[in-house]
Image 1 (tube, rainbow, N blue to C red):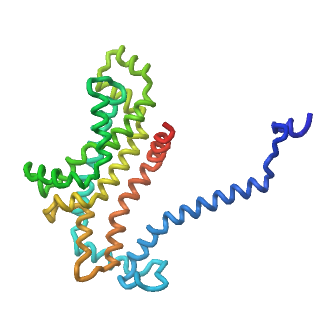
Image 2 (cartoon, rainbow, N blue to C red; image 1 turned 30 degrees about the vertical axis):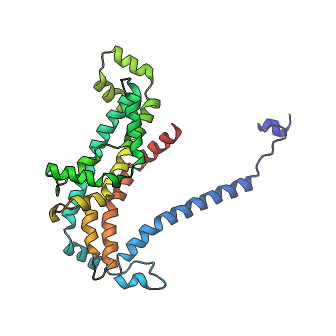
Image 3 (spheres, rainbow, N blue to C red; image 1 turned 135 degrees about the vertical axis):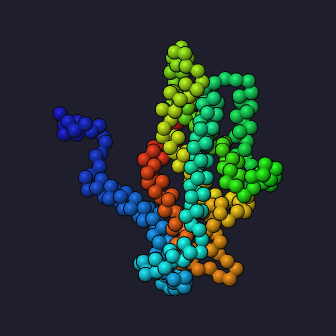
Length: 291
């Protein structure tokens, strides 16, 4: 028996030399490291600029190492704006919106995926058609509704219009359709489980990664939302963080050191949230792609 056959190599097939495999593996790792550095560099440079004076941004070459004005820029931001109140408002809005979106979207998606009812296809088509409409078209009708309800200036005016979204319903519907077997639904029905028990005990446990992805995606979107809170919030004590930090840019000039410090303050909580849920986020994204 030849050596190639003993090693499991088909006749006519050439085995890749070890040195070539090592070179390919090394090149792959170098590209991954380069991609990681390119992705991290904007955050690093934001941190560097937050430790310098405003004029340092226009220097050539620009500064690439931290300076000595971190504490001063942080103190300037804190003394200029009520950052903690704005951050508390943003956490309340983002957390409440995320929890309610997960609840409402998952209920709707489970019904669309596993139940048959009159008008199901037409209703789902209407939900999907909202993808074709830019969100800016709803700004004026939403503002008029908030005015009629007397909610202008209150945080619930930011939360309520974001309670459900077509993306979340579509995402979870596709997941439930593939991850919850029909046999399991039939067994739960024979066991006497109704809609809510099937939703809570059958559907949700199988969709943890998809819910984690949607939760982080929704939280980040709500945290970074700027236009709608800028329009509907007029109480200085109820501004979200993005709206409050935008007040650092004035017609008389911009202190870019303070501006970068404010951007750093806004992005650090998102990095913490993503670091906590990164594993589930990537797993949900991968499963969604495979489905």
